[in-house]
Amino acid sequence: MQFEIEKQISVRCEKEIFADIVSMTHKIVVEFNGDYWHCNPSQYKADFFHTKKKCFASEVWSADEHRIQRITELGYKVIIVWESEYNRHGWQERLQESIRELDGKQDKDIDAFRSSVNNYSSADVKLGELLGTCETNATT
Image (cartoon, rainbow, N blue to C red; front, side, top):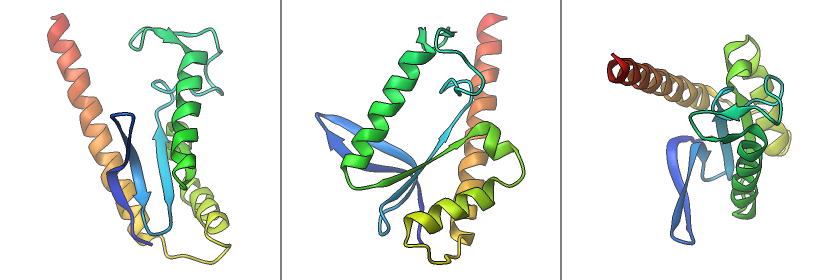
């Protein structure tokens, strides 16, 4: 299975849709949702006000649901991995199971996927560190 990182999968109504990790040949999208940025429902209540996004958690969930629906309408199968899942051991096994289920229950080699995940995660962490540095510098 071949995966690409930060891949544009569509342009709809003049708005581009990018996915975190995509297998174009198997029509699989893997989205990594940060617990804070996407207001993980296991950690946040619907009335939590996200100060950076300036909206409530319920609105974040609605926007995410709408986005996933658009991606699904394009023919992709979507797997969501939450930051807290990623940080726990065993996320790779859950993801392997999801890919197997989506791809006809056949065993697949996900070394390429793991490499994509590691590259994506590293880039995401570096971006987060950079943004944190910028915010710190802006307030000092």
